[in-house]
Structures are given as C-alpha cells and as structure tokens.
Image (tube, rainbow, N blue to C red; front, top):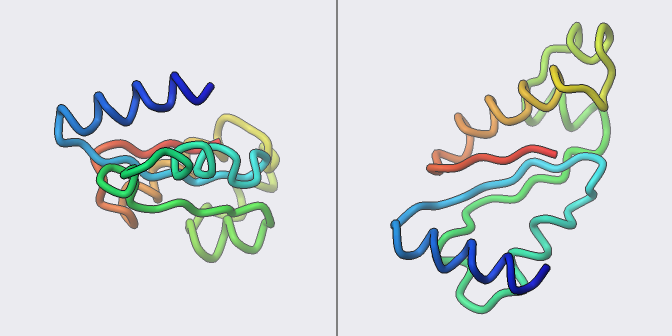
Length: 97
C-alpha cells in the first residue's frame, strides 16, 4: 500500500495537483496513509473524518434527507460528501469514503 501511495503522491506532484479526503467508515485511514509519506503536504490539503451523522450534515452539509432515505453508507451519501468537500477544500481532487 505504501508504494502505491508514494506513486500517487509523486504523480500528483508532477502534475501540480492537490487532493483532499472526506472519510466516514474508513475513520481517517486514507488520510493517514497519505500523510505518512514525507512531503505529502505538498499535495494533501485537507482530511475530514465525518464519522457521525452530525459531522456529515453540519460540516459537509450532506442533506439529512439523503441520509434518511439512503443511509450513511450509500453511494448517494458518498457523492454528496465528495461534492461538498470539493467546495470546502478547493483542491483539484476530492475523495470520499
């Protein structure tokens, strides 16, 4: 895994791109893997662990109706998380888990 993350960071640096993550069920694992790599701060701008419903609705502004209708572990919720992360982070690449 570490080798893959190193390759991704190297590619992001080469292309002058930045990345941010919003994590729920992963509990910050992806952000942790990225930030373990030296100089990752050149590409990694923001990591949010929005494990609770409160965090999803109040920080990432996921509509409560999406969570009520589809659940917290759903494609719809993940899409709303990444959409709003893009607005908050202003990075080139936003990832939600």
